[in-house]
Length: 212
Image (cartoon, rainbow, N blue to C red; front, side, top):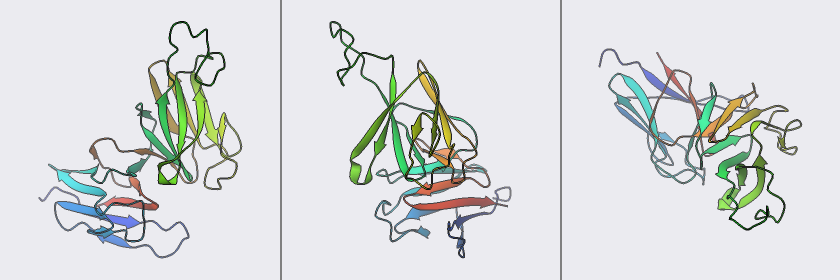
């Protein structure tokens, strides 16, 4: 339609090498190991992982592959649902509730220590689906970074010194990027509209949508 923008997807190269640009030629563009935008050598990408499509005059995106998901780079603070996943640097993290104590447990948690009032935790998801470290989240701001903060990843060179902050309220959690070099990404949970310049992480590949 005449009022629809022209759309292209740029494959971003972190090493500064030449970048490929794939134009969207119809109403739908598929990305995965096969498709209009192929990512053939990434074991964490499904045959069809991401779908760009027009909803009326607006471009939208959805994750159709499941598995390791599609993540969108934060431009502003966003709420993280329980079970929501975040990626920063090499870290893939999921927000989980801390199980409530049953009556008569005398303040003991699953770790055998007194209940400190934590209601959420951030859990590492490792390659292959294994679970790594779990980080209790206090109410209020939880700073995440490589060197500074409540949760640190000192060996991850892709995490900035001060990378992001996860703000926890009694019933919700909100994440905000702190101007990190490589960005903070939130997993898509439902179809969403796309704006010019939006970036998506698919497996290990970063792509940017360009509209004119």
